[in-house]
Each structure stands twice: as C-alpha cells, then as structure tokens.
Length: 161
Image 1 (cartoon, one colour):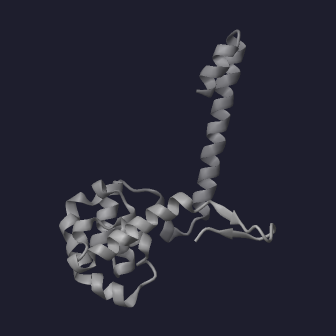
Image 2 (cartoon, one colour):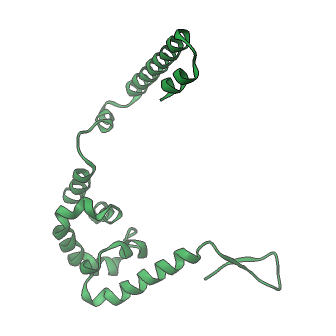
Image 3 (cartoon, one colour):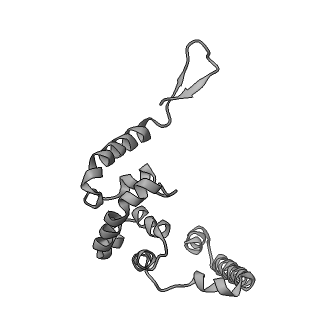
C-alpha cells in the first residue's frame, strides 16, 4: 500500500526505485529485529509464537484438557459457535458443578459469568435467580456511567446505586 501511494504521487523511475528500496530496507529491518527478538526469547517459549491450531480447536482443547474449573470456566467468555461441538460436555460440567460453585463461590464464579451461561445449562431451581442477575446486569451497564450530585454539597459526587 505504501509503495502504491508513493508511486501514484511520484513522477518517474527515480521515485519507483526509492519506494521499492525503502520498502526493502524497512522489511529487512523488521526481519532483523524479529530475529533478535526471537533469539532473546527463552527456548521453552518459542513454540508459543507459532501454531497451526485454529482458535476453535484451541478453545475446545482448553476445556477438554483443562485442569480445574477455573481454566474450564473461560469457555463462557468465548463465542458459543467456537464450542458448539462440545456443548453437551460443557452443559454436563455446568449442571454437575453449579451447586458446588454456588456454595464455594470461586473467584471466577461472578454474576457476569453466570449471566453468560446459556439458560438450559442452569439447574431449574436456580433459573429465577439467574434471570434476576441477568436483568440487574443489563440495568447496571446502561446506568453505570451516570453520577448524581447532592444538592446540599456540590463537591460530593456519588454513583447511582
């Protein structure tokens, strides 16, 4: 794109050689800097820069081979189309563990996370509570940036609760 822009503005062969030379110089500098960067990366981490695995396969692998519920819980942050192939396994995992999470309240088991769980994956006894959470989450997000100034003290700014 840069070469095309330069060529359109230029008026002759000299500008074309300068444009291609500049692009070659910048490309070579980038390749050299990338080589320096890769030489400074620890050997065990170099493989993390290159992969032929798709994002969908990575999401599925993270859930299926993930150790612990905290790692598996990240699946709810992903697009549901990416984990459609393992939806039944995710549903089973949520239904088996929901009440334990409700009692223990792990760090990742937040109202935001619960709101992302599809309704058919929530135990029937908890569905009304989840509906309330989803309604509150929507309401809060639309009013979250508003503030109210108290009349008696114009210096005090308080968020809407």
